[in-house]
Length: 380
Image (cartoon, rainbow, N blue to C red; front, side, top):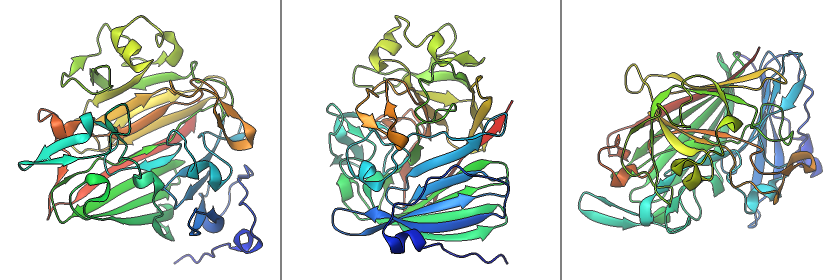
């Protein structure tokens, strides 16, 4: 058994933990430091996971947020490839879900309501009359209990939270456990587990914004994207799926072959106009439901970093930072302008509780919600 120590020095000194990029091959480790305090005085921690190849991830138990991911380029130079803030204060304020663990229901539910077993449930309408990402105080704004360990797969952080019956309008007490593992494949593996005492919708995801050139290093329009999907779910003016599963063939949504994000994003296409660019759920091609398979591959040609996303989920939301507008000042005082990051949010489909033709998101007592997503990095 490997023995490791929690590093509390920064917390004792009251300093903000360093987000240093000095990553070299070393013994795998996981350390903890004080990240700050919430408005009501609760201590928030920042965990630093390092694998044997020197890749580093920092994750906070506030909202399960992935604060940084330091990844080497083709020349071995490390850069932080996710958008976010240096200090907790940025995450306590208004921001577009940078790095967040999203729930109880990721993405949108039309008009903030759904019917389940003959009863109508009302949720917050926090997005143009619709419900988005769990409501006014979703999982991204909760303080999670944390435990950590060294495993055979790499350093591991386990976050736990009990969402009470009626929280944000959802039925049932939902017990949630999210496990982050930084593997020796230079991959951040996220496993989601949940159980409930009443039927309830569940759709958990991670909302990291990636820029493979490095956070704040310009727009992502030159990134080349491949999506392993031959259909997508078209949306209406509120970005709610219409219920159709439409072929990507002959549309700007066709990423079956690699294409630059900027190649078609501003075409005069109805769906791109409605989303102000790509902000759509893609229906993944699966050999069998629930299999962990490749969903997306993204290549940044200047530095050579490659991100591959594998998931057990049936869909992935591809979003290209259409609503970033320079109002968020990120790490290192970088200003996040329009399309400075992209998201690949693995998920069940938006508004599934109201569209019975979509795969069900209803979790019932005695069942277990278990999904896995892997963000794997390499170079070429």
